[in-house]
Length: 268
Image (cartoon, rainbow, N blue to C red; front, side, top):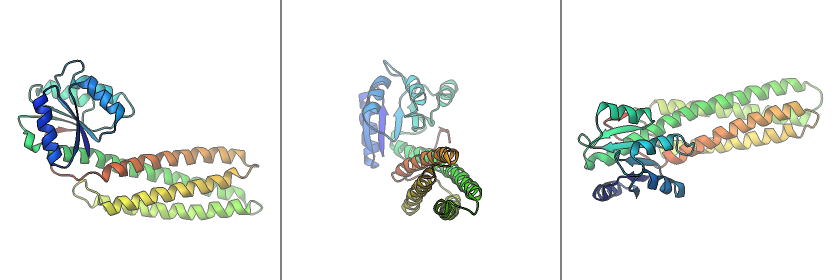
């Protein structure tokens, strides 16, 4: 994964860059929070490791700025300091939304790569599970809504629309079954680790869902005499599409990570 290291000490930036690079990560650096924001504006990163005391914009200010911006609100942010390690500093960092606050005296540089891997995997794993649950809620709503629409059509007319909705209710039932199986598979993991095969299957599921929603939306919208249904279904489809986008983003993140042990103050 790509890690942004923010530290005003050139020797420590070089050290962290070398250690993270040896662990297989791409590293970009910035000497302070303001420079870090410029880096983030130009490229995507999967995690930020930041010192606290820096000129222009310190680590606390940087963390607050990121958490106030929707683009980076959930970006794993890890404080790594050997000076600001008191309880008040750690409480402030965590209250600002940091993923973890690591004491450099307890987590030496040669262990930092393992800690970052574990922490980031924990954050993304939690997001993955939450997104699965949210997607299931969206799917269940879509399935029940289509059933209501189907029953409202009655026996007469709208045969094409009725057939399409009926087939897509079946498809949604199938997707829900597969999604529940995915959630049970995740529950079997003692560590927050997801195999590539599971991720690919979830990606396939999301693509299938997108096709399903588009098909039923097109069928409903083609019924000009049912504008209320069309409008409501548009909202339902938009909601499900948003869930698809979220879960696909999580899948892309998870494809780049493996989890290991962790130490320090953390936020799940």
